[in-house]
Image (cartoon, rainbow, N blue to C red; front, side):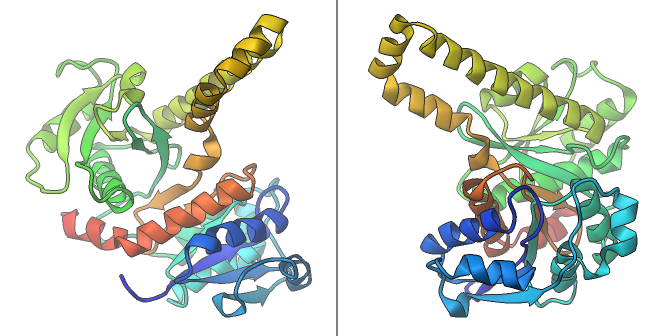
Length: 335
């Protein structure tokens, strides 16, 4: 895709907005000049921040609104009063084809509902899925569903496999996509009826998009043997929160060990390069940008608590999705 990519940005969602949003745009803009940002939010606040930013004036437009979705708003409340909010207007911009993709760091439930109210599902897909990027020993994995659907049938999981594979191919076009179903064991007989039926469906699926690798257990998600992990939203959300908690525990305990006494401090100085490499591998900002898959136009959810570096990464995800034609990849492989 050679034409200019237009990203609709909800500037008022998440912590420390719009400051971190504009800071993130500036960082992303430094290395990505062929993009245009439609920025939705309080114009007075945004203009004040932009005064000291190195962003070309011809690379953005500010669409003013005083209203925004609050973090404490329920999805229903957001939907009822949301039509003049920065989040709604950003997604509506995608609906009206004046932007290619929307990104928000705001309320996840509200974003999900507003996106579904404004955008159509891709034909032959019944349910959308929330996907995210996880680091593994070799590179990056796409994991889905992470909470959009508590219950899923065989068709849903098959659709998630295709959508997840298309996403990974869009983000990492030179890699072979390898898909696995998250299960309680690696043997064919393990799991409930839905999982076992999905296994058979994927095993018999004739496609050129991905290789099906069977089942994967939770303790092997980060081994890197597969790079797309598929599950229902309940299991996926539990796995996500467990992984986040484990990462926080490890980094916290490592910090204590390296700063608790003089030997630890000396050791941290000697091993500074390796420690920084370890911290970077577990830095959630570098994997920021969850993607709502299944809609006929893409929507990206940035973590509300991330900083400008994390938001810049979410913008990079937006760029790759459009540049490598994610939606077309899904449509071409969905039966």
